[in-house]
Every structure is written in structure tokens, then in C-alpha cells.
Amino acid sequence: MTIETMVAFAVASIVLAFAPGPDNIFVLTQSAMNGARAGVAVTFGLATGLLFHTAAVVLGLAALIQVSPVAFFALKFVGAAYLLYLAWGAFRSRPEPIGGDDAGLSLSQYYRRGIIMNITNPKVSIFFLAFLPQFVDAAAGSPTYQMLLLALIFFGVTIMVFSGVAMASGWLGSALARSPKAQNIINRIAGIVFVALAIRLLVFER
Image (cartoon, one colour):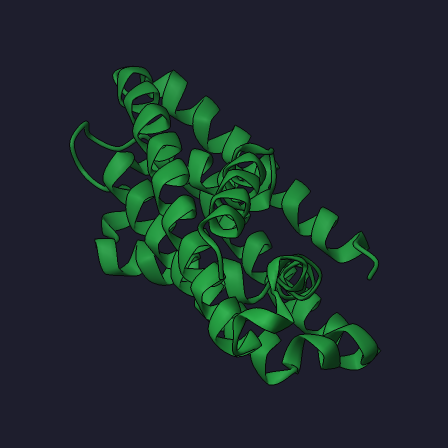
């Protein structure tokens, strides 16, 4: 794989990472509610989930999801149910003292939250199935190796961009957290966003 191809893929990945979507919106809301450290942990979880989708593409599982209505809708249902669970928690949350993680969650729990959010979104596998092969050159060696390399680039770009989003959103959330009223507003907005993401996932067609 040439340097030019990798650079082109990295640029395309940066543009896609900045485009509004479920993952970066999820990072933004989690950071605003629970702080930048929680948002960065979620970011690493989301990025880890990308490795699952890469494996799915390489092993052909993404193609199965694309052609099997049962597998596709089952994964959509699980993802939407998890988002609704997070929305329920956001609506029920109360203002917390400044400096503490909401609901006492550890960074590893936020990390797992990011993984679950990512791997239960069938759109990611289908996106990888359509996106990665465009940058694979059959004459440049093993397609599997090339897709793994591209996935690592996407992994790095995701961490870089989403961590920036988490830091900015966490700073804003910390400033607003001095007001219990502002905390309630953030929690309600986050709950609405989670519900909207769940609905968007449920109505998404292949």
C-alpha cells in the first residue's frame, strides 16, 4: 500500500470523524454529563469496537448482516435498547457534586459503554464493508493485511478527533456543572439525544 493511499484514507477518515453522527454525538453528551476523562474512555471503547467491525468485514460477517434481515434487525434492536437504557438513566439522574463521576462509574465502565455502543450498531460494519475496499489495491499485497492497516489508521484518527471533542465538551460541561439547574438541563438534553439516536438506529434501512 502506497503512502499516497494511506494519506488519502487518513484525510477521508478525519472528515468522516468530524461529520455529525451517533458516535461523536455520544462522546459529546457523555463528556458534558460526566467529564472529559469519561468521554476519552468512551472514545477508546468506540475505537476498540471498530476492531470488531474490521474483523467482521474481513471474516465476511458484515456481508451476512447485510443480507440477513434477522441478524440485521436483531443487532439494531439490541443497540436501540441499550441507548434507551442510557436515556432512562439520564432522565433519572440528579445533580452531582463537582469533581465526581456521575453514578460512580469507573473509567473501565465508560470504556465498556463505548464498546457496546459501537458493536451494536450494524451501520458501522456495513460502512466498513463499503468504505475499506475502496482503498484496497489487489496488486499491493494481501487485501486482509491492507484492510487491517486501514482499520488501524481509522482507529488512530477516531481517538485523536473524538478525544478532542471529549476535552472540549468536558470543559463546557464542567463549567455548567456549577449550577444544579444547568446539570438537570444537560441530563435532559442527553436523554433526548439518546432517544433520538435509538429511533434513528431503529428506522435505519440497509
